[in-house]
Length: 365
Ligand SMILES: Nc1ncnc2c1ncn2[C@@H]1O[C@H](COP(=O)(O)OP(=O)(O)OP(=O)(O)O)[C@@H](O)[C@H]1O
Image 1 (cartoon, rainbow, N blue to C red):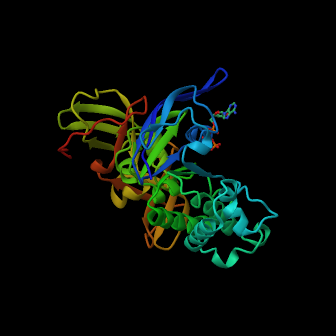
Image 2: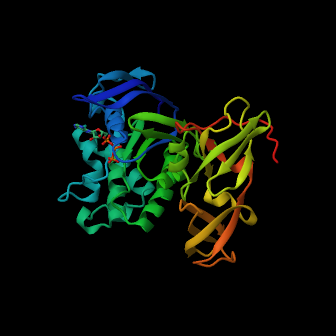
Image 3: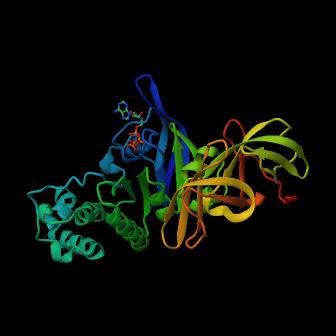
């Protein structure tokens, strides 16, 4: 297995620059997920690592070796695509064995590798079947099996679960995490699904407009998003962003008036804000508490999920606000609810969308 280093990768298609100076150091055996909205450049970056696309500038190092000019087969990588790309006329066995036949591996070694991969992926009793006789999840496992037998240094996955239904996607997420542990391999995985990213990744790369917005562990991104973009992309339901105006700011923090009138003092480092500044307060739906001073929220739709109740509501000025409350919370559609939040659980963003640095010891009024 191997480290994977991207050094100042940029990519343009004609006049359109789609990747801007991307540098990442991915550790040996790490599971890294590239996540971001459609068109942010995740697949292009993965294809550049695979050698299927050429970077306009920059270098790719696998295991410390510069592979930027190497063709895909010489990079020690193997890629699993969204479309399984199986041969319908070949058996599961032959599909998995395909890259080894191309390499002309001796029969005994080939059989050993295919049986091992089939064992790991629970396909041993399916080896004689054709892809058409398998479920979507099983087909995807065959595609993964074909990748495993090559013993790559780095596994690359391009949205491998997008063609599966929601329940199967959940099962496959768990299987892929187990597979990562079993193979102890370096893996890079592309998805636009933040739940996949949060549940499977050791570290997540959030891409936005061809730039790395943040690279960190799932909980770093959840607790310490550096930008409004990361804050609203990570976490389910999405973080609320409430417009606010700074009323006063000193060493103890900034007093802000949220739209709707509620005031709170947030622990922001001295000197970062002045009276009159426009900011946005980020409040995660799961961090609000019912019946404490705070926001008045009209309950438009209430979803009872059992363990939690999700409120889709609106503030006095009409802005939408979502809250995740206990399953048996006393609320009703068409009514209203008082929702408070601890200042230290709030995130504060400046007009450009960057998070404002907090004081280490907040003084809360
Ligand atoms: N071969 C190409 N020629 C021209 N433009 C391209 C080409 N491939 C990708 N692009 C453009 O590069 C940008 C990034 O595309 P990319 O497929 O990497 O995005 P993505 O984040 O993977 O999106 P999605 O989740 O929709 O697959 C897009 O604007 C896309 O239109």
